[in-house]
Image 1 (cartoon, one colour):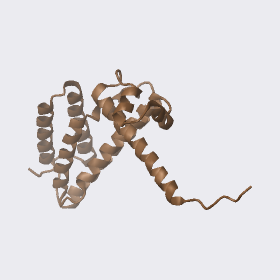
Image 2 (tube, rainbow, N blue to C red; image 1 turned 180 degrees about the vertical axis):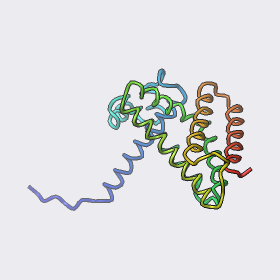
Image 3 (spheres, one colour; image 1 turned 90 degrees about the vertical axis):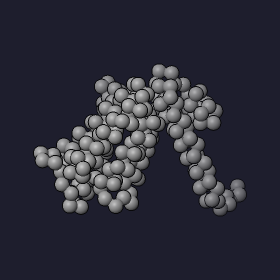
Image 4 (cartoon, rainbow, N blue to C red; image 1 turned 120 degrees about the vertical axis):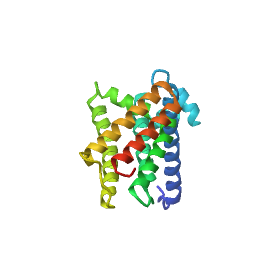
Length: 210
């Protein structure tokens, strides 16, 4: 029996990269189809077509449709959180960061990832794991918002009388959620844009920045 030759680590790395790219393409396709067609109409065939892979490849990476949809939901919501965090990087003040975040929220509204979060919340009524996951997502958004408000105070800013950091963060998360839910139901982009603009102005007034 011959001695095996040296392992080509470059080939392994390339293969892993390709698998990662294929997996990510399927996840992106899944959430695009979810946002477009909804859970009731989605099929693995539609997802595979958008991803540019065959059904066998899709099942190789994710097993069942339910496993794929759960992973796609986590993928999309984590991407949304990352984009909000990126929007704050490099901003000169907390107020500027807030304005950038609201613009990022508007982009997310148009891409409709909200439909995935609301489905996760609904599933949480009958699935404890989904409930914990939904709570974790909201906790992440609340922490991000509290950090932004705290930064405003550290820069010498103030809050309106009676307003606290946790209270304002909770209010903003709930208000944005309402805009997202209405847009999911109505697809009225003009109404969503108007509501977000009013909400941002109100947020700035509560930060005594108006």
